Length: 408
Image (cartoon, rainbow, N blue to C red; front, side, top):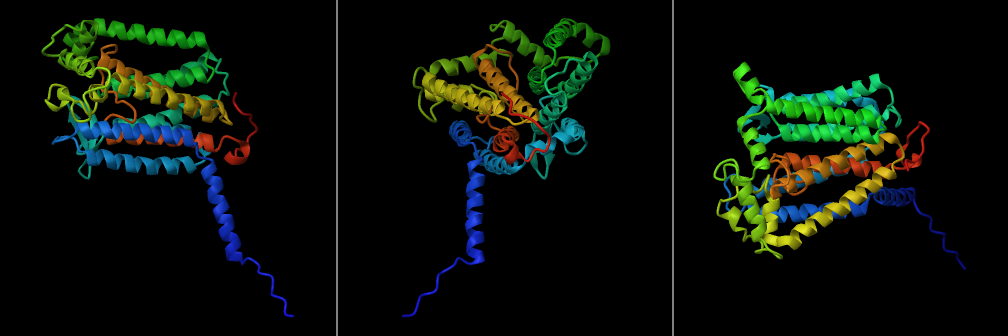
């Protein structure tokens, strides 16, 4: 009786099987809790932005949607990169950070808005390059401080690092963009703290900077008169500080935005007025509601419970990101994630605090929520860096050649 031949898999079938296994192995490196929480935040933000931009001739929801699409692609590309190989490009990141900061000063493409030179226009598209500068700043700060392996105890080395980290922040403030400058400074201080800088020197530096800023504010009028121009603060920045100190200052002028923001948040009640029913924004009482004051729109439409839900989502995301920092294989990865975490926490605290009148008014966007493709791209790039650190959290996965141990 004839014997049927044994069927063997062809080389193409075997390679296909191996290819399928490879894809599965890659997908296993994705931190799904972080991705899911982030996408829920993005969806929540798109819902509120859609409502805030209804019938708007200035803001385009489709543009925001395209920013999310491009951002997701960037996130996936960066997730697949081995972050550990970037540590050798310390000063390249510094140069790119400075380049994007000074880019708005270039003729033809530079654009001045509201007295500040912080935008560029290329091929008819406007974007804020300082947002992308934040990503390069995080990589620069992490690569710089990681060299000391958690023991930055030399006074000379500390001063050098402190000066280098402060340089981009000072340049941004000169645009003037005080909010972004403060964000960069906070990132630098957080990375220094996590990087093992001497705590006494770190506290002394922060206090010295704070005292210097207070002195410059106090002497601002004298400096302006001496130089014949605004030296440290613009008039609108002075007005914002005065409103923060005294909320009743100039209620129909500088204090108008804060008053309307508080009315919007309070009118939302417990469960809000419903999607698309935020009267403070739709009737034009609340300026810049899709950007700086997006939290007010959310609070008015979804109420206290909707606002609490947003804060809860942020808390979950920050916890998951912190977990990545503690599970990084090398110090460089830990500092990257710490820088991202510091940036997000400060921006959340500042933006929501500004809307509530608990922090000075700045142009700092709310992560994953505020309208703006530049800020959205930054958030996805930062998310991609976090996912890359997670995906390459072991020596085998990361391909790190130098000896090391998991950071606990």
